[in-house]
Amino acid sequence: MIVYCDSLLGITADHLRGGFYAGWPNPPTPETHLKVLHGSSHVVLARDGETGPVVGYITAISDGVLAAYIPHLEVLPAYRGQGIGSALVKHLLDQLRHLYMIDLICDPDVQPFYERLGLRPYSGMIYRNYDRQSGEV
Image 1 (cartoon, one colour):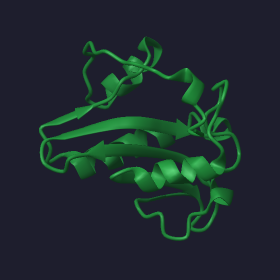
Image 2 (cartoon, helix red, strand yellow):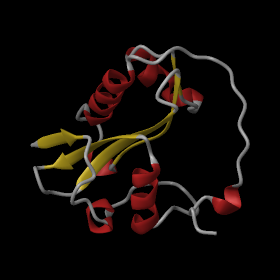
Image 3 (cartoon, one colour):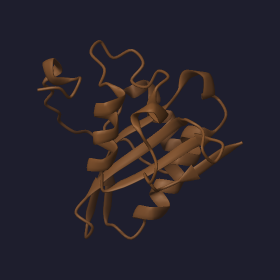
């Protein structure tokens, strides 16, 4: 049974092993992934059972007044296709519904997924330091 929570209490790097950041040439370690979660203003986790591993997560960074940015949504490959990603987005949007703007950047192939959840396509700009993709300095 998938359990959703917004607390990092008791979450360790060991709960984050198993294939997050699939396809990234230089992915963050589970230890760095845990730092990402702790550095986010909002986190929703999907766990396989009450105390099981994290199988999906979404994060937001917000000023708490007007704006939030959603930088990460990931579901482990073995758990995809079960509605976990949609549930994570819905949980997070519910937490952020008091804000004026909630933005995210995504590739065109996943825009239909986000559109089904109420987001709209928009144009934006990005700058990437791909040599820092692992989060290690």
